[in-house]
Image (cartoon, rainbow, N blue to C red):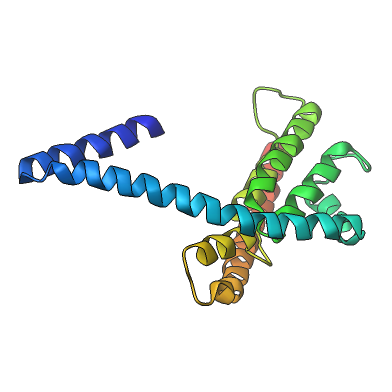
Length: 197
């Protein structure tokens, strides 16, 4: 579907340029856009290496483990049907930790791992369980304390103060997560009441 949308956008752009008599703009824009993408990617490598290295140092120093331990009681309440010490809880804690540090690239594999573990506990394999829906909601809202990836992109793009978005990102992601979890709890509550009738 996404490929079809992209193809439609590109085709419309080419047709419009041709209709306006500026078809040569398509070639020059495509080349300059590709050059800018490669330049941005190389700039991102350095900044992402810095943040991932800091995450690795924090992991080796035991900070990540302590953070995960502090989150565990909260996670157990969010996912009450997951047995204690189940691998799913560890994957969920790591995913949320990566989300809080704004490491979007690390969140995806950890989220997939957590979802696979929750699927093993799901009695109805063809339907997502309530815990799987909660995990997806938390992953989507992405409560972030340090938006490392966005800071890296802003830095690579030449921003003078790339970290100035930390406060607003914290506020927005916290509001989105709290709202989503409230709705999730209400749906679970009313869903359970409806099933008892």
